[in-house]
Image 1 (spheres, rainbow, N blue to C red):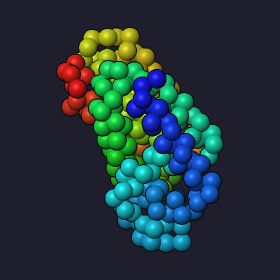
Image 2 (image 1 turned 60 degrees about the vertical axis):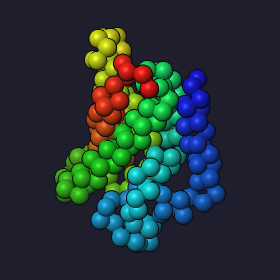
Image 3 (image 1 turned 120 degrees about the vertical axis):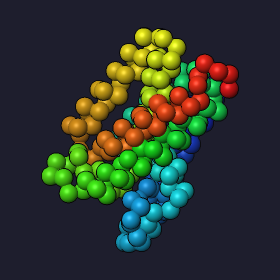
Length: 195
């Protein structure tokens, strides 16, 4: 496993363990709150660092288990194809773009009668960044002509998006934004050029 993948896994696990001691404080200041959120009972309001920190917080043991399983699965091939530094850039850009789409959806679609079309109020978890790794792999498959990589990488987000429509509390806009952010970052970082 690539050292960059190990570092992401360990950082997420360390923050999750810290959550067991100081969860209300961590959620209030480091989870991602919509741009219009002011200080309240549960929230310190939006702060710029939350664009990165929210991806290291998780809502439950099952949440972090699934997300770390995906980081473990997708990190090594992404790091091998793009290089470790560019993988971190893809991971980070995807998280930010995922938040932006989720926040816009929450702001403008909050009135929708169907829950999975509303967007999220508060966002946490690494899934937007994980979808970004998938987006970068899809771009690589298209750019390199590898239909196998393209097909495999496209199968995951479709299945996970359908699962997100079934399970309540899944931020599908963050997933979609993360995928788009990862695809665009992957194109910008061109995996066929050396890091």
